[in-house]
Length: 409
Image (cartoon, rainbow, N blue to C red; front, side, top):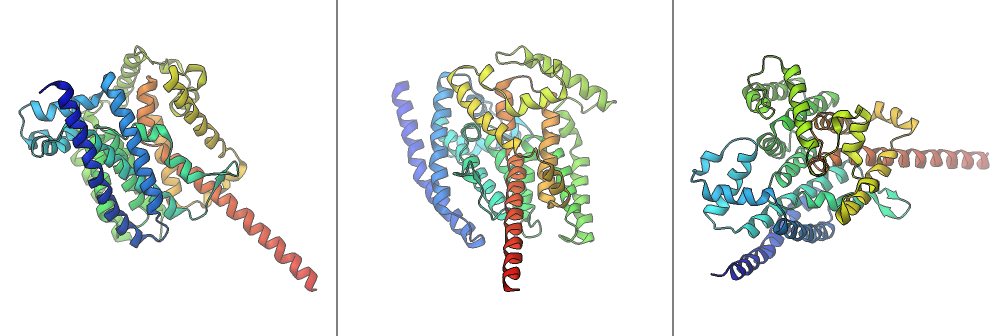
């Protein structure tokens, strides 16, 4: 069969998968609608088809450029290993997830791209639940743009979660974890699945997540009993001890005798390697403030590589404007009384950013990696803006009440 004919057939098969995924979505949405009155099936359906657009964009990009997605499709089908032979952390775990679809169900590359794109979309569904369940107020930016709608439809977030690879499942894992922490006792499955996905794909990220999760449990004093806290902490500690070699092995520190010195050496070598890449930036020469700024907000227009760079720069400018909302004196007062999930999000965002800035020196990799954690920053900003709106509303009510009392007198 000619390559062109084969490509057309694969594309048709992938397109035929879309109605099935849409119907599957409706069943998921029905269950979520029964649990959450605020859930908007219409908005999620729009978000699904919007996400599919980026699945098509990424597929087109991968067709003409090098892409890890090609490796993730090729290896499970050609290495001759059994399914269980791929059960390991990191890259191998993506091969493990892909193996049955490629080898048992005969999924093509195009179908695998669509399947993982759908997994990424589920991450946005749980991101929506995470935000909407904790923040009931609607917040407008520039008096016209709905905050939650804006961040759900940011292009860069969809681009890196719409293909076969690590981005989609780890984003789902993080959002499942964030959603489950609201009620960990009744959402144990979501908490476990989210933790498993993060650990299996990026063990070092799980280390940060576990630490933030334990902190959240203790900050919520009345959430669970002391006995349950002890069980949770014991379980997490046991997992960390049991799999510490896999976690440290990501940075070649499994046999280290001096973790701090070896970690610093690893980050320096890693950063130098990435400095030499096409879109490398000299992170090793930057101060800590410059490192954070580069990781969170670059590329901006002054260093945007081409048309795609300009599009990304617009989104980064939005990040910068949103981040500026926190530069108020009232923010520090808000943090003192903020709920545990806000503190958890802020801690996880900063610790993850701190760890990544030491090993990232390539703008392309930075764009992909920061998409995992930006929603935690958005959550803090959104909650703070809702807090301010509610505070202003209460003050107006108090003033109105006083005026009414004065007139009556």
